Image (cartoon, rainbow, N blue to C red):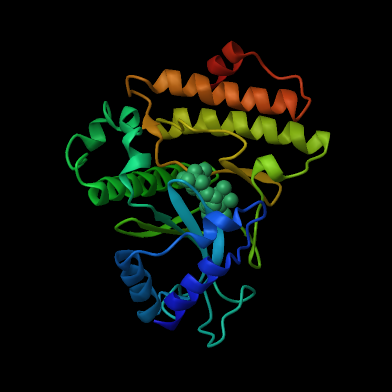
Length: 272
Ligand code: ATP
Ligand code: MN
């Protein structure tokens, strides 16, 4: 388990590729045995060759950077010494199994017909697994319907592997951190509006936490991330969540982007 050990060292040294990280928070992280086992298996089966740093540590999840191994894809060469230039890059989202954070997520799950069964409030590990499954399914649906997002690759319990959005080991910035000129800013706004619309109309989903923090600026385009709390558009609170998403987008582009934006009402009409 050299690789997993190394991963823990990475965490304890706070070495991360993500700018604006909190080193103290990072150094307090320890991987629980279940997570270690899952990651170890991904490495030992050759699905991954390397887990190489932490992209983000958050309340609900940590995201790691990894390289695909020899069994990854047919398109990739089976290099013994993979580097970002030749190997497939992945982002691995590891959900935290602490109850505290997930308790207040009830409002998203209750009212979701997809999750009537299997959501077990008393068991944090099952709960977190449901959230991870939800995110995988939502990403899959978005990906299939042509909404720009990371391609979901696989899920094992609370560990979600997806396409890494970035270039040669460098993660693409969140919209919040991308310094865009006014022309790009305008394009990004239009793309955000379209993401909300396409999520709603093509995928029947409302993001539920859309903002400049959950959108990445990748190859001069907006990609949506963090869709574990996204709900079906027939969820009883879907339109309330959507209104909030719309306000977030409008606020950001009006203030930080200094754009003339649509009214909440106009954008709501456009999306629905
Ligand atoms: P928390 O809110 O607890 O911080 P989260 O649930 O918000 O975690 P995400 O928003 O999905 O988790 O991801 C956290 C961060 O990890 C993102 O802001 C982004 O910087 C990075 N990230 C997530 N997915 C990818 C990806 N596919 N490629 C590159 N970076 C990613
Ligand atoms: Mn997020």
